[in-house]
Amino acid sequence: MTAAIIDGKAAAVALRGQVAAEVARLGQAHDLQPGLAVVLVGEDPASQVYVRNKGRQTVEAGMLSHTHRLDGDTSEADLLALVAELNADPTV
Image 1: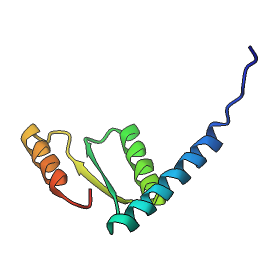
Image 2: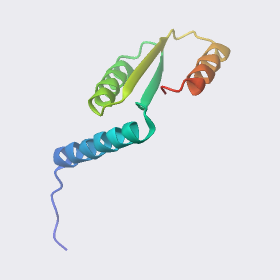
Image 3: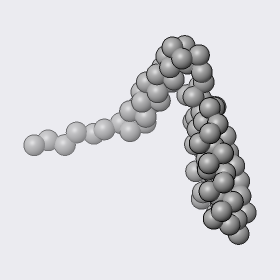
Image 4: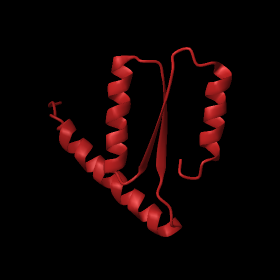
């Protein structure tokens, strides 16, 4: 068996293109713009980078991006209330 080199960057670009096309199709078919909500609790630098990149990629795919930042000492009840609010939001 011979090894095959996979170009991850090319695969990612192709996948992002497919996602953007599907987002556009859904938007036209249902008169909506899909969205992604991210809830970031605390100030972890790695999580902040991840969330920033995810937001950028979401917008590049033609979707709405909603980022909610909460303090690290946010109560479970407050977090669950935000999740319930986001679940009821038609743009998410």
